[in-house]
Amino acid sequence: MAEKSRTIRDVLVGAVDALKKSGIPTPRLDAEVLLSRLLGVGRTKLFVLSNTNLPDERVEDFQRLIDRRRRGEPAAYIVGSKEFWSLPFAVTPDVLIPRPETEILVGEVLRTCRTFSLDEPDIIEVGTGSGAVGVALARELPGARIVATDISPGALEVAERNASLNGVRERISFLCGDLFGPISEKFDIIVSNPPYIPEADFSRLPLGVRGFEPFVALVGGPEGTEFQKLLIKEAPGCLKERGWLLMEIGDGQEKQVEDLLGTEGVYCDVGFTADYAGLLRVVRARRKE
Ligand SMILES: C[S@@+](CC[C@H](N)C(=O)[O-])C[C@H]1O[C@@H](n2cnc3c(N)ncnc32)[C@H](O)[C@@H]1O
Image: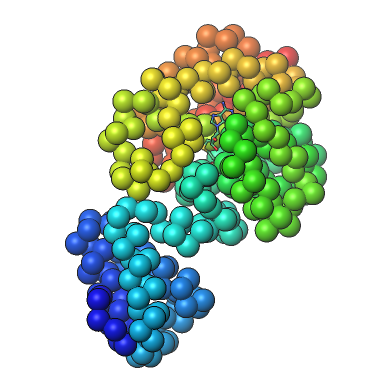
């Protein structure tokens, strides 16, 4: 990987080898993503160009990107973007990199709107981060009025940028504050992918997560469920009658979350949806009349 003036194929082979040695779990994908971004071409084009020589400066630029990845920095932060719901999202260290499993949360909101004929729903997303969930919903639900909040001003800047990038800036109001602090109206749907990692688990997270993603986006208090507890407690005051609360949950948190919902005594129709690994990932509950 250190040699210069080599073909794209040689450079990629060296990078994949270097990433493998550093224990990076997806070496080929990451090397291709970084090189295709550097050269401004799609990943498939790399194969068409595989016998092309790369100029020395390009090899050095690529080496620098690979070195960053070897030190654990996520590829999405290095290239500054991540796809979610087949849409492009800018990502910076101010925001959590949107995860594929969060698409299940989006899918469940859409299913809820379809099933209960909510054609023009009022929706609030609490903790919008990159804006991935709110923006995907705005794209899918042209009649929806959407509010997106976050406690992090840096995250909100990125979310607003992503709403513009995806042509829905006019459809989403972005508000900075703690939980429901910035709002006074009521909603048909409250949706959130909250921070839900227990404090004690933080140090066991992969380096790429604990060393680079925002702590405030990851850790949900000593138990991990503190944010969810607050959402469950405060949501009924911000939901219309028969409105829905939908949240992403962490591995094995379903019992605790179900108990928290039960304790409030104001929710009914509680249900969970599993992710592709079979883990219960999304909870949905309805405010009683
Ligand atoms: C797990 S991230 C989810 C980001 C994005 N919605 C997604 O799914 O990719 C949680 C988000 O909640 C925000 N957050 C943390 N505590 C908050 C609070 N008390 N009030 C509002 N937002 C909060 C964080 O800044 C972070 O952006």
